[in-house]
Length: 270
Image (cartoon, rainbow, N blue to C red; front, side, top):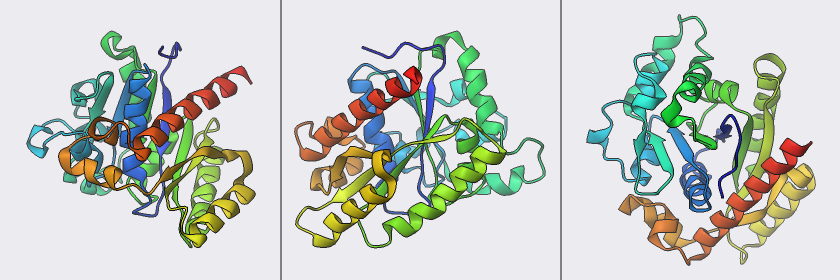
């Protein structure tokens, strides 16, 4: 049953390090939330457009994209498309986004473009039913990522179980704190999800232990395993839950979605 609220909850999936499972998490968390009854919009704010590709949106079909939204030339309603996943829509990305930072550099309110677009979306009766908006960010702390954080209620951080994980995390936490202090006082860390976990790897086990010790309850109980089916799914333009529902990766993302919703309920009750 979908969560009833007057405004969609906006979650940014962000990590300035590449290759940590950020886009994979955005796609599959969005799919898992939709599978358990939520109505989800995934905003692809990464110029690489991998979230769009991973949900089967051909590049030739991206006639209106998040680039147009960021430049104020289209609304999110106009940019969003349905996907093969019921209750999951996507606002796709194109490589044009690479130039958005330069094009917006002299514009007023350049850090509030996405927030304004989401606010406009909420007024649209047809699109008011979204309970979650997920934003997939580029693997850098640039103007696009700052726009996402200014627009968001919370940040979800995918963290690969590897040696430099904590080093990258501390930089991201500083950025979130700066945005909260200066641009968006409501921004919080919703949680940290450990990805690409191989229990046979001693280092991976040590990273899990270190991150849980360092971040405590901010770390989700769910850990996303290293799973070949998760890696294969994007090449078929499908989330892993459509590609192989019973694999360990799919089951982990369903558990993560349940955890995200439970945390949201706890935050609302506080």
